[in-house]
Length: 361
Image (cartoon, rainbow, N blue to C red; front, side, top):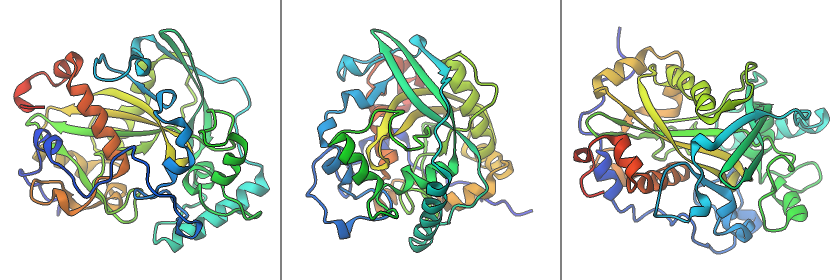
């Protein structure tokens, strides 16, 4: 049997080298860009788009849009919350879904737009996702309220923020009319706002597993996080700690996608993604006590290995030699920035266990 992934090259980039490379072709994360003309806007969020700044400029510097989960002294304390002080509750209100006639129209338009962009069109095969409905903070205590939603509602809302509706307006334009130049509060806007999760995996040798995303995937033809997924809903969700919540959603997906749960992970930050209308995104970093050869064998047996084949371009991983041949996806840039800050803290140094993997960081 021929392995779907021939053995990864042992020369893939180390985390230390990756964090110290200057990616000159990448634009700064939060710099204002010139306004775009309407005809320049894509149906989709694009890494090079200026929409996230020109539309939501009033939210800068984003204190209300980012929560950090690590002990830190490098960023404003208003961003920080200890994971031990977070609980997750199931929202008792009726879950949000678009009216059927609106959903059908938008879903068909989204399918056509995906096809026109050369992306794999969504199908009616649906799955339940987690919607972040509200986040309540009282001093050092925080409560995250969740409820079920589904992937197709995400397709018809957050993934096509700049697609024109039957009335000639886009989601972004409609929300701007109501909320001005601010992101709508979670739970108020008619968007799926499903929780996305991204993880950067580092091996025991200090190598960062950063794949080149395929053209069919979100952030296509760009360097991406090791794992990136929409968090699935579980019927057994009840009141739980934040750690219990993470343990219910992360290991299962890692098993499906990477083929192993032998990964220690920690949350870095919970952000709202401007390009997708404030869709929440959970950023993680993970460590595995595996060699690349061992990791390859796990991925080859993973239940979703065919899905990974569609997401990843062959077996291309970032190395020192090819790093600048492609840009970093917006998702990877944000995850990297918070991982860099994490590594400057005592918690970060404790998590990685030894400074020999990360000299000079």
